[in-house]
Amino acid sequence: MVYYAVDSVLIYAVTMTETNAAKTLLIVGHAPSVNTRRLRDAVTTAARDSADEAIVRISAQSPLDTMPGDVMTASAIILGTTENLGYMSGALKDFFDRCYYQCLEQTQGLPYCLYIRAGHDGTATRRGVETIVTGLRWRAVQDPLVCRGEWDESFIEQVAEIGSAMAVGLEAGIF
Ligand SMILES: Cc1cc2nc3c(=O)[nH]c(=O)nc-3n(C[C@H](O)[C@H](O)[C@H](O)COP(=O)(O)O)c2cc1C
Image 1 (tube, rainbow, N blue to C red):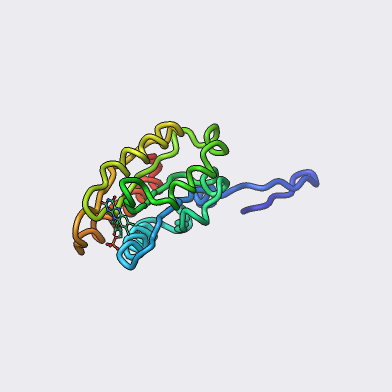
Image 2: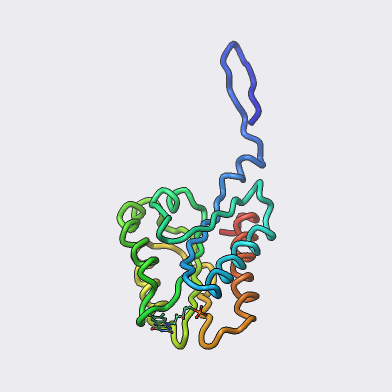
């Protein structure tokens, strides 16, 4: 922040870097197991490594800790969930239940993407999340990633690509 005194009135100018620094990439990832914690860590680390932290701030947290204000101040969001009993995790559903109406008016067009860790399917979880974000009018900027089946180390690399692409896109002003 740069301050100037003109005719005894203090005004300020915001530098270009500080203007851009207003961008926050919010990562809301449910991580109830070692593997899913690794996924959330990988998406977060890749995002942090891919953009200037002075331009894109990366915030990663559990859906259970995420409040409407976090979403309203985000420039983009990455959602991560397990598939449990044929649907998204209760934690991610709770996040939507608490935030939906407060965010509805203010977050239309929010760029988002989704990753799912599913033991053997993931389809219903994808559909469930897409139904809700369609209602919110968020904007998918990447295809959802479904890490399906037996654990595969390549999931780490795949989810990292999502984090990286989102951070780079925000930094470049693409979204
Ligand atoms: C109670 C329970 C229900 C589950 N239901 C589903 C399901 O409906 N579909 C699916 O693909 N995987 C299901 N899974 C598998 C989980 O999605 C998977 O174990 C979880 O994402 C954690 O991944 P990890 O085992 O690699 O740590 C279920 C797991 C649990 C514990």
